[in-house]
Image (cartoon, rainbow, N blue to C red; front, side):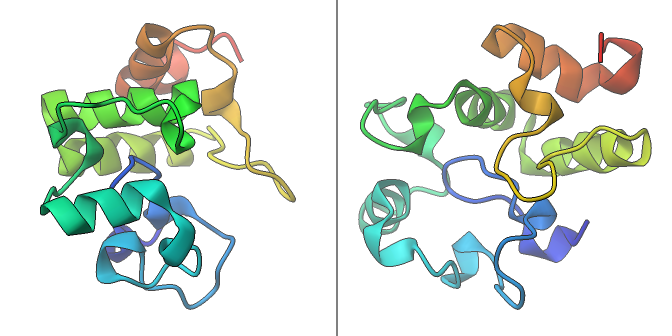
Length: 130
């Protein structure tokens, strides 16, 4: 985990991304997809630090249609970005996988509700049925 990459505006955990080597992270303007990312464009144009600050959250025509991403953003709204990074770092040490090799899904995509995803983030493997 590279904590300095932080979390994207939408709730994606840039700190755990393995897709773009050398990327400084979304909020540093380094994501190669930023010019076509609705969440990046909206937050930077409106001055939001995260999508949950918008009255229209969660918009349905963006990456927020994915339950995992919405759950991460709701977590941030309640406990903050540093708490999310703390939990994700602990969970990674416990063996929970953010993205399986060669894909964009992982252990956080297995729960059936946002509440279950948030519980997995908060409690790690002790709550997991993985």
